[in-house]
Length: 369
Image (cartoon, rainbow, N blue to C red; front, side, top):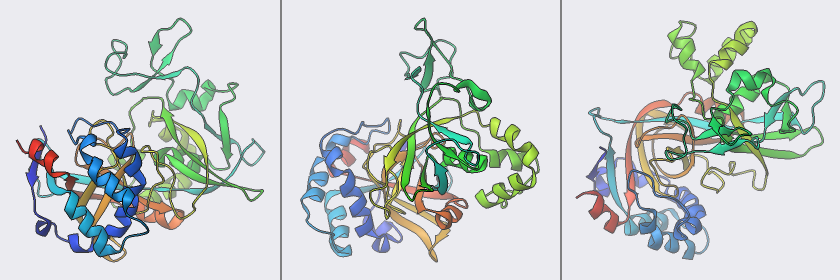
């Protein structure tokens, strides 16, 4: 069982420089849905309904707050609780990775150059839970295929889909020139596509087949193809470029397959809309385990070995997205931004971290019992 340990603001190394104003903007983006009770409370017990006052205060504050004003607002409405997962005795019991929004050339129609599709969810794909999950299906599965007879079964995996399982269904929403770009868009869960006519379009996560995610970088390390230090995104891309004949077999070992939805590019300075239904803010939005965590909630994450912009990562961030590989109460994917430079940073983030969740005082009293 996850434990919570009461902390003081002075206990949080780096709290005074945590970029509270940026985090406040991200928190305010989620405030309306948080105050309206739209976000479900995860199994960690961070009750969304207790954030009403803080969410309304964020909505009421006009303009962009100064750093000191934003910091005071967080300190007035919350108390910090360190998250200690069950059986975790390490000094830093959590873990962070990074993700970003790729920006790649694409086409809304198939051409000789653009031949690799991104798909919308199929009509026979349905969400399942512990009640509706068929007997014998892995409890990990949150999606399944509804057969014509009404029964449910596992959906086709990556290998079957890439071999043509969805052809003829008209589900293609965009086409790419490079299968490696397509694969990494599946890993990141979103992308910004630049069409040849000058238009830009975003694609974001809509659903998945339900199969477990398998990191191909981990496979390459385990099989001696790359060292752990080499297995960042740049290293993996380099390996794929050197071994094109082995690419498809490696990709198929990650049976997970993502389906997408299209969204317009309204603010190029912000990221795609995350699962929390707000645009992601670079270095202030995180993806969390949606079964455990609660969207819209602030966290202070300390990852002293992770250096970004010349400083150890000690920042205030907001839970606004999710990912199939993000599992556990002290686990997050940090949204770094859009484009190649952000991708280089995101691809090397694999660091132990300390997680402190910010909760209203009345909730803190309940969680510390």
